[in-house]
Length: 261
Image (cartoon, rainbow, N blue to C red; front, side):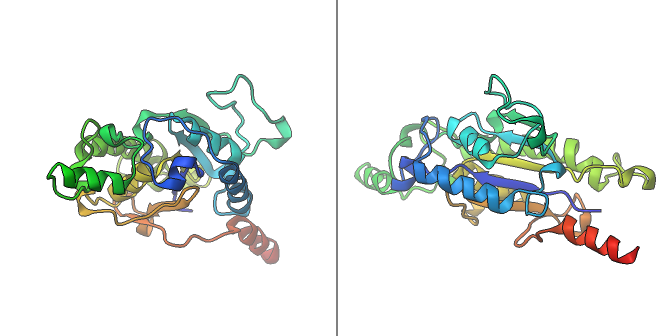
């Protein structure tokens, strides 16, 4: 039985991500180049023989920010239901590839940068030097007028708990959710997709493997980048970062079955 995964995707390039300005609550569109790259990412990584298999998705969480929602649209998952911000579904029945529900959640919105919204790290450093303050570390200090690491941790942990209890626990098996031999083969893989932002997804990855945010920025995620989280030994108690995932799993499995007939 396949171990369920969480795929994290950062929204595509914006003008502010290009010049390093911190973008939390500000609404910005993707650049034309950003849209092209997300389209290419969708074609390369999403499909029945790709890294992200739409039919194996149980749920999709997306940030309230439009740049994240546009990114999800361009990935073209082929959802059976219309996206929450659409008046109607934009594709026909033949294009449906997943039954996963898409949910907008504040838990995966970008870090609230407060006073640092719209300015670069260089500008922040210069301002803090002028004010006689020590060098800034978002993972340790949070943002004045915005969120602290503890506040961000609380909402990330809430989402992680929901993913493990609702979507991964019933599939992977826990003391309360131990799939029987009769039902295990019928269960979906329970994969979950998050489409959000750079700092919050890096924080999510740290909390996934039970690191505190104060441990520092261990992981990087470029605009339009994709990451994979899962578990070691098919064990809910052993969350892990999946450094390299296999592609074309279904194709290989089907070919193996055909050869044994």
